Image (cartoon, rainbow, N blue to C red):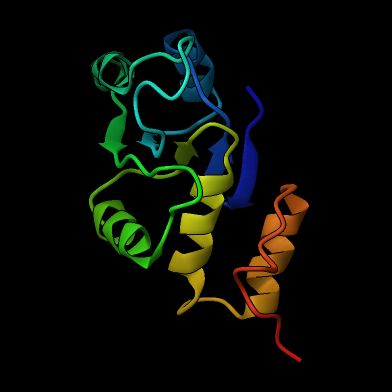
Length: 136
């Protein structure tokens, strides 16, 4: 599991497993967002199973499944609303972290300049330039 920080209080990763939760907790995260629908791959842990264990450990958890290639502004708005009641820092995961990065990028449009969003996502290894128009 590779955690990539987009901001001091928000990071993304590929699919996590229940066995990763202790590492995630020890890394300081206190909330988890799952943006991956159950059943995309046979070997992925079910989000409800991860959520149950995560909540037992003290995490806040949001299951907001998004089909691959379908992350959009409504998901960003739902996430922003949920974050108001979640502990930080937050780790969001999907298959590769891209859906979570798209959602974060869309959430940040009213907060950051386009170049700041692109810089943060690029530093984490995600190219959001097709989504976010860079300032000239």
